[in-house]
Image 1 (cartoon, protein in one colour):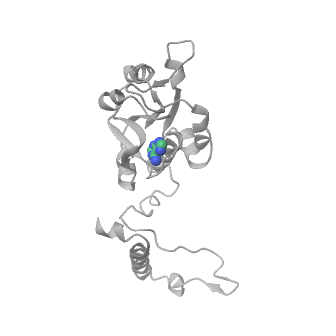
Image 2: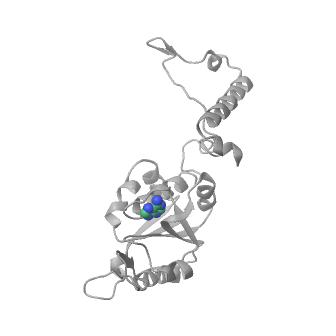
Image 3: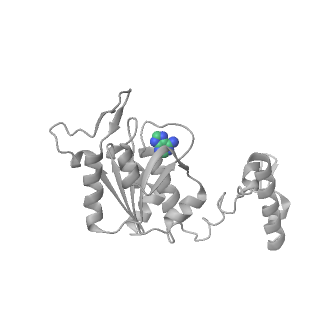
Length: 225
Ligand code: ADE
């Protein structure tokens, strides 16, 4: 998979890809992530990427020209399956969307800033608009990092244990059950006895029940879908 991220703040997006699982995925050539500074596609001396709104109103709007130049340059090199715009008014990111995107070969992610981008960009270049939640960030970069993390860890080979992404919370619309590790007892706090029984079907059944109980308590909305 190849991810091209278009941003006015590439430095904000460097560190997530330089640590831990994402770094290892890149080093293992399971994913390529390329950052593109939108200012490199500007045509004026000031390297402007934004301007005031037609019709008046507070806040700057990202201009179509640098975005078109950047996206067109990328599209001249290869086919893209999606051009995603990170925006608080997009569809809310869910595990299912991350699953879908992880199957794509090449994607572009455009990070918004200021008031957002010229509507013509959204109408003619963007194939999908994604929000990471009902709150407004100062730009799309952190949202793009969240999306990339959620997607990249699903690419086969990225996680050490191939099955572990399948047992994540949300994969089956259930939250994950409680988990325990050594020591068996700590300051009188015990691990449920059943987990030492060696009875795998029974343990699996307990985990399913606990996952259901937790989901019902914390996220009953997930059970309605
Ligand atoms: N840009 C600003 N806020 C955002 C959000 N919640 N999700 C995606 N992109 C954003």
